Length: 229
Image (tube, rainbow, N blue to C red; front, top):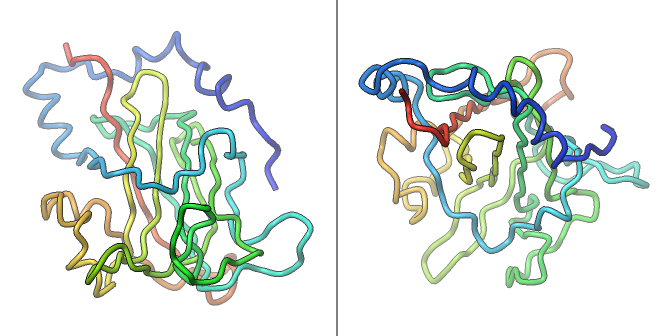
């Protein structure tokens, strides 16, 4: 388990070098770079964000302190990079995730889903990108759940990514091959090209990961708060 980190202090680090991560090309070239890298589309936060005060620097959601049992469901590892619009890695970015458990329920008093909670699942966590912009989480594939009459949300994981000098991004990551993806009202709000950026293929994880687990790669691209020169 990773030790807690003063997240606000971490986000303040590197302020003096933020300019080195900004685009230095012309506007036209910068836009071309952004299109080539594929800026990650923003999506709704949803009603079950646990709040910043609840977040701790923990990237393994499959176990909780004091319990030897693992969370129910299919274990999935998510790896990726946080990049700028020129596809350069962003170090020290704060990456938060939150999701439903395998039954499709969130750990929130506001969730009307009658499905059972999993006492051995964390439901949310956060980490920070390393010098190469890389992050990782170990979690489970969340269950689908009813969002409204005739609308079931497909399995998805919420992401919030922030770093000094960049626009905060809230988005959702989906699992390739899920039949409910095609009818989801939230996923359907973004373009087909943008959907390709948030739907992730998962495959059996190689040796070194938990046996029987899945592994997927989800890169996230942020937009600078400053205009390109």
